[in-house]
Amino acid sequence: MAQHLDTPELIETDSQKPLFNRDFILITLSSFFFFFNFHSFVLLPIRIEDLGGSESVIGFIMGAAAMATILTTPAVGIFIDKWGKKWFLAFGGLLMAMTTIPFAYLDSLSLLFPLLRILQGAALSLCFVSAGTLVADVSAPRRRSQAMGIFGMFSILNFALAPLVGKIVLQSFGFETFFMFDGAFGLMAFVMAVFVREPPALSLHYEKRGSFIKAVMKPGVIQAAFVLIVSGSGFVTVISFIPVFASRIKVEAFELFFLAYVGAVILVRVFGGWMPDKYGYKKVSVPALFLFSLSILGLSFSSGAYSLILSGVFFGLGQGLFYPAIYALIINLSSEADRGKAVSICSVSFTFGGMLGVFIYGVVAELWGFNLMFAASGVLCLLGSLVFSFTGRGR
Image 1 (tube, rainbow, N blue to C red):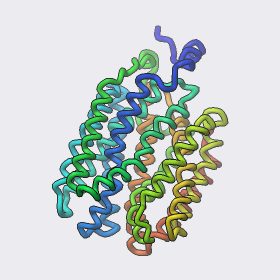
Image 2: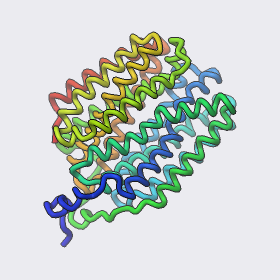
Image 3: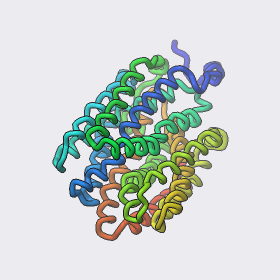
Image 4: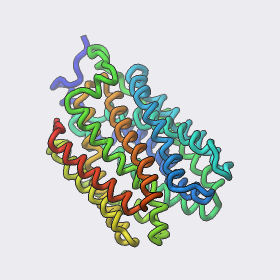
């Protein structure tokens, strides 16, 4: 009879597992290369605007990827629980590369823009769910939030690195070379994933897999999913519109926001990533989400480079703690056999909020301006933090 993974004997052995073990490094590298490719598309709104697209068109095209992620993620979560994660991770990188290169040859707005973004959303689902689940599998349970935070930190690094490098390539060689260069990183993500050794799913001998709906409705999970929807609406909106917003307030170096954001995330996860595991996921995530909300509100008052950088710092400090804490909470509230579904719930919730946010707030920005858009988004996130503080579960 198979032994449960959460017995004291196995927890004691697993707690001695190195944080930076071989497979953790390979998964993190694969995800890093994938997200370099994916986050380089933060420059796509500039291309869309150059081709005559409005704020609402930018929101539609950028949001198309989120829509696809929402539709495909539940299925990915079910499939990886049944068939494993490694090859889903590999195919996600390959699909991202294959859908990046065609952008090099598009010189007018057409349906190919949202269609390719839809396929990229599916690639994101494949990579994100499989990588997040694999990290949970190869990490010690008592350090899960820290492991998720460090893993996510290398992906988040690309919010600054990918636009910065991409902008240099773009200005030096043009959009055609930029997209070809970008697609190479998807191929590297594929190569790294091939060498991952996926651990056996021991719990499948004694745990019955539940449905996706049952996984969502578990006590505490639905409240955490709600707050991910709210925070996702703010996060994706900010990331999608910062390049255009910066130009409106006469800040040419929009990447300053991303550099400040990434620097703050690295700082808080390196020196404070242990806090959710020690003090409780809810106790850490509520004030972190509050800080995150204030940073979005601060953007509505931004008028120059310094205020943009300051908002980026608080954006990173808040999101840097909140995000891995909520993910670890949902994973710990779910059975090991349904771990893929747990990560899928996180992804669907956050992405669904992001899709709604970028669609709705894109229209708000076009009609009433970016200041009102950021103010409305920040207030909604504040309300979400209050709701979660009263209704969410900490363990």
